[in-house]
Image (cartoon, rainbow over all chains, first blue to last red; front, side):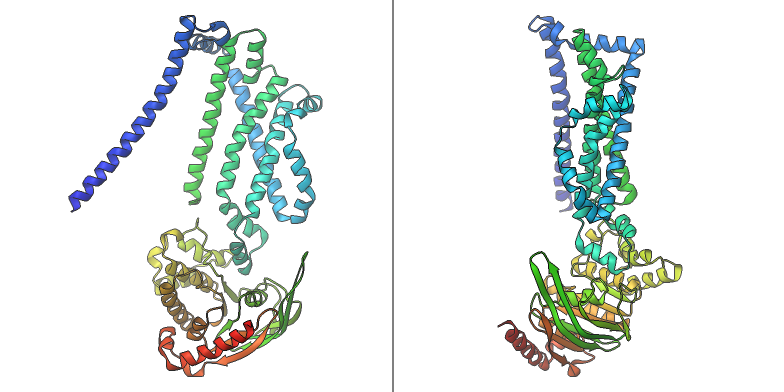
Length: 270
Length: 253
């Protein structure tokens, strides 16, 4: 009997492993096939490599960027701007959300303004920021903030307001003050909401930084893309897009790691 | 601890108008006794407990605790809500000590007392477990220990068994009844279940439909000293049940 069960178990584990292997092979294969096909199409003259570039040309461009030291300058500038914008947007957004949670009257006053600001396309404010902050990293970070701040406020406040009323009442019956209610119930109960806000903000911060760099910059991935397209160096544009994808994915993985660490540390089982 | 309700009234205001929840409620709870409040749904039972717990203020009348009017929440009252309300991210130990943590009374002797409560009521092996790993009955017992942890003189039970299935309900109410008796607490139970009220209490207060007022008070003297299970088998059980049932029925029509 026991043998039979373990046989089933082994079969199950084998299937799980097989499936994982299959998925990973397909993932890597798809990427490899894409690049091989691209390269082949360029070499065989099916596509114009001057317009659409080719993996070998992208690789060459990356090598040049690396040897000239420009790679780290541009990558570093954009990453720094993104991290600063992300931290400012997330922290300020969370603080405002807490404030609005503490005072429902304040929330009622600000509600229509938040709704309007949320639906406003923030890129429209780009030129305004340039005039105010000057053509530099200041305007880029302001752009990033404008894009991520309001969404963060709305999302976190919404999560806070939907905290289980029964748990709030229980804490009040134990004599808890607002600060205790916030830290002992509201924040831990909204762990998933907060992590989701972080995940969304990483993406939005990149949007803000690239938008900002399109408008004003002398360094950064957004600058490289604009510069590359203006001088028709499509290899440079494609190489930068590739770098951008890697950097954005890396930061998203960072958030996933943070989520794991926090979950373990706080004992939160969402 | 004694409780006295004096001409308690409560009216809720909202954009849609006024709701008269309690019209005029007066009755007493003696020290160390177990009193149940039954009434049709929406008769203001929970409002009564919320006022007593200091979570809501009455629009008229007052509540006296040991002769002193209630004014805000107090650590002398333990409130046990409808659902267990254990927080899923804290262990059982973290949940039962949350009251002491809030009241900043976490000291070795208090923690030792909670440890003994867990031991006595069969939960000490689950200290490090999360609530999701416990059965419904155990969670309810854990919620009671959390309520007892701050050592209140009076326990308010707001339909604490309504989320449990029938089997668990019977055993858990037996459990909880004996725990409360053993700890010598005064208890006030709100329920819509007549048999639950008769099986657990010394006195049953019947409220009328909204706006709630006291319709009748039954002292179950003959059933004193019996456990809920024994009471359910007692010949007088059905007489009380029918009496209260008829009153609730009249109230409803």
